[in-house]
Image (cartoon, rainbow, N blue to C red; front, side, top):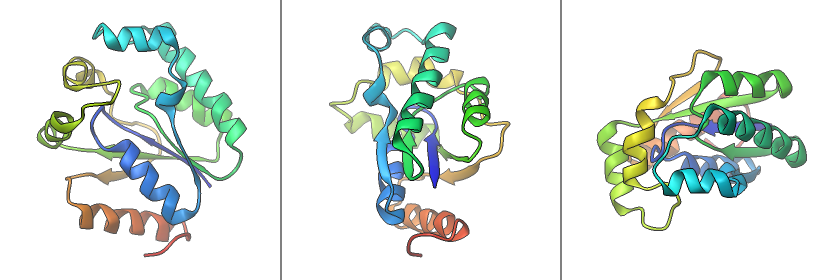
Length: 165
């Protein structure tokens, strides 16, 4: 099973990805681990990625998924439909899971986030650039309620016939 968790900065992608991976017995991988030095510099300067960097990141993620094999859950923002579609063409068996959160829930999460590369100020600049998916995906609404999150994850995994519900 190949799961790709995506969404805005602060939506809870990593938490959702880790929970999915644990319950489905998959390898978890945070796409931020593959950010290049140049990408990190853009983030540090509160600059949105250029189109070239977005394309480079999509290719980096494709290579990573190929290395991860058949059972993984990867989380990464991947803001543009174009780049998610590139991944789908190269890895057609990947299932995209959109973690959607309200602006308020994102702001609350980012307020307590202290040691992540993308903090509140950067999120305010780049989150408005996120394109809601036009491709096939499963949507998970992350309200911040742990029980509701676990219920939705269980429902997704039941639909995929793995994990516990």
